[in-house]
Image 1 (cartoon, rainbow, N blue to C red):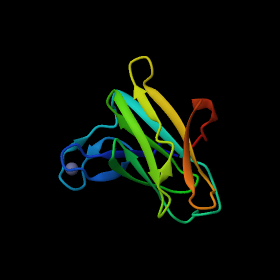
Image 2 (tube, helix red, strand yellow):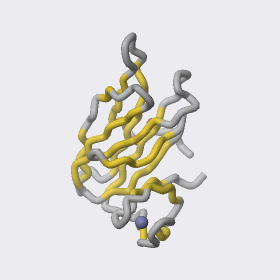
Image 3 (spheres, rainbow, N blue to C red):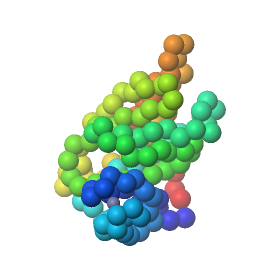
Image 4 (cartoon, rainbow, N blue to C red):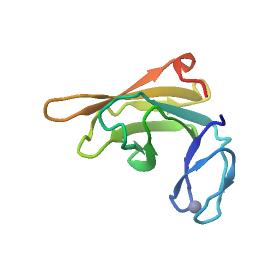
Amino acid sequence: MAKKYRMRCPACGNVQNLTASAPCTKCGAPLDVEQQGMLAIYRMGNFMGAATGFGIYLNEQPYGAIGNRETLYIPLPFGEYKMHIVCGMSRKCNDPVFTLSPEDPFICTKVHMNMGFIQNSFVIERVDPSTMPQD
Ligand SMILES: [Zn+2]
């Protein structure tokens, strides 16, 4: 299966899935999946909220949703990215900051939900690329 890229159009902010570089479906600006860095996110399976997407935010910008047991690849220029995940009323997250750089251009992460009595919270962890599901 081809990698699923998720990009946010720098011109109009439209978020879309891509399997290769293509024009933005909204404004036609070119979206290039060959960026300097890449952030991969794998959503670990769980029962609660399995049917609903988790909303992804990078530096407060929405990057769409990720489904249960889904892997997304987000091509990005080098820089610092604070990752935040929300789902319905669950908005607590450990908000890690990842830095894409020439020394560290490919960062893999996994996200899971911790069940809480009052509120569920999300935990995002950096993982070794070899532990990511292969597709
Ligand atoms: Zn656009």
